[in-house]
Length: 402
Ligand code: NAD
Image (tube, rainbow, N blue to C red; front, side, top):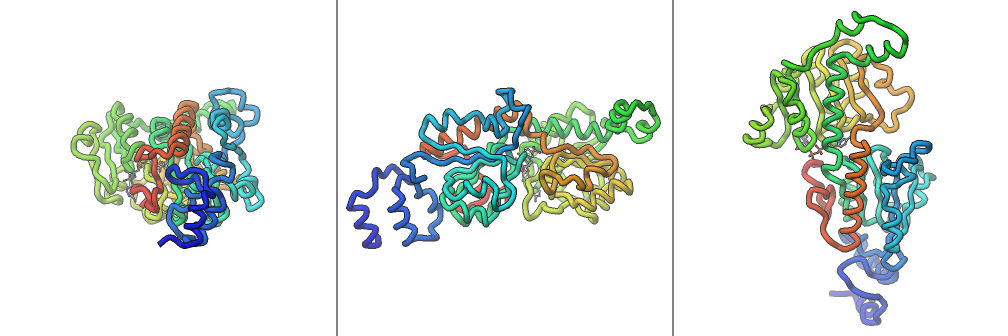
């Protein structure tokens, strides 16, 4: 039964038009919230208070002197290249890179934001508290892949939609993984450093340099990136290409990729010369590469982790690299971003670490900028998003995050 007060509001014509969901004026939305404060997807009923115009808040890294390149869409200055388009439709677009602490611009702008765009490269940690602050939030878009910087369960509880541009940087990341594997296995970086330092010492490099061919490589996670990595590695004449994933990729795909599935992670790890991490960060994968697990790996094996820093234990990795249990560790993701100046992974030996860059090449930026625009366009038109883009939808988390 509709409450009397709300029914009279409906009859009084206090709202403009009822085209599907979020066109209720603020007064009706308030009334609704009085009656159904915990209704799922409820935030979609709120308008921005500016007619149909939404307030979109984007949080990106600042490019400063590098922002001149118009193709550099991922930075705060160019803000995915969607400003003109958004504003021409009557939406407001606020962009910031200031995201740390409760007095940040992000926090100040959140209360009346409808749509929040963030990116893993400059992660704004969207905690339960921030979600509570964002009373008008309806959609959270990750420009890129990997939405673990958002408290996804809290977003689901609030009935929010979280979407990412699935596939947008798959090739960029897989390619970077090939690079890091080679850099580690060939012991390339000490040689590069010698060049800069005016030195010449072949022995200091050669004593620990290998070919990749005839080695065993295993990927933990064989989704989009994991499978593309296996495809890219086909030309290296590996001894074996192994994968561990809770889902089989199917016999046909295994044949195509020359890959063999291992159903027990530790069994696979003991066989691998190189292990590449390609799972999302979830409750199951957080800290997966701890001291005990690393001790089960082949001595001197390498880990490449472009997935998420927190999948590996910081101290366990550092100690294993120092002791030689790991031949090296490389990746672009850290448990904390930006990594503090004294982060142990910066200074450990045999590492191929960089800031979070693998998925933000100019090509990837073009794809995730276009994907973000597509998500927004569909959202404004109340059209469904491509299925694979949904990370949280109607209270449900996407399967890869469970
Ligand atoms: P995906 O969803 O296509 O694949 C993830 C795979 O992991 C799935 O096959 C899933 O079954 C598997 N998986 C999940 N949890 C598992 C578990 N506990 N045990 C075994 N398998 C498990 O995702 P993707 O596009 O391949 O991306 C993978 C991750 O890479 C992202 O979630 C993100 O964290 C990271 N990423 C990093 C960058 C970067 O710039 N460094 C860019 C893109 C993605």
